[in-house]
Length: 109
Image (tube, rainbow, N blue to C red):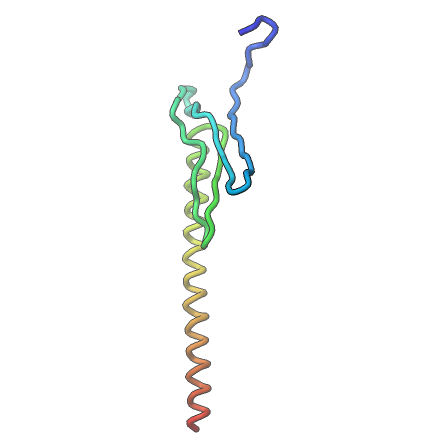
């Protein structure tokens, strides 16, 4: 390293997103720091999380344990959201079926 470049005093995550014509590219380096200060060199800093009928890429920086908790929490909230959506859809379909049955009964009279 040239002498005029100062060595960084703090670590920093590097995550990049590039919008292309047909896709979005997301990448990061893979070094992470455990809560006790140890280094991990194969950390996964980008996770795919499903929200209802959509997917999201979540990129995180910071301690590995804290990042894992954020991903876990996002996954739990996404799952709860999907369950609420499924229940709402069932009620919606039940309401439509009841309306069709009422209309049929009124026609038959």
